[in-house]
Image (cartoon, rainbow, N blue to C red; front, side, top):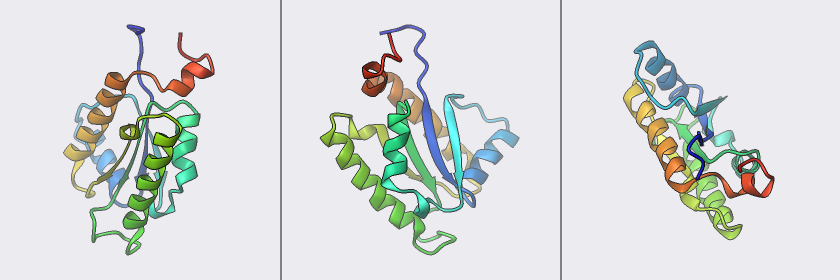
Length: 143
């Protein structure tokens, strides 16, 4: 494996909780893996299975959805809908030969910057353990 491999991690974060936790992590100067690219969305309930799969198609090594804590969604049940989309996408990833653990769901309150940083580190380390997304190799992006 390439010693210079730096994983690409995509995080779909809800505006009210996970994105606020990420902002707080920055304000608190918490150190976490810089590999995470945050996609800010109003509610994780708006994440579609296709968005998750497209992130992998576009070269993400791991992807996670981070929303409000269960039972505390600002849009009532958005995070529960997101959880179902993640489960569906994991099944599709397995069908196409990608490890389903490359995709996860986290429930993070706005004040839990430590959990946001931990999720970023966990998904980055997982990407390093699993190696580059095989779709990158198929497209010639990884040597």
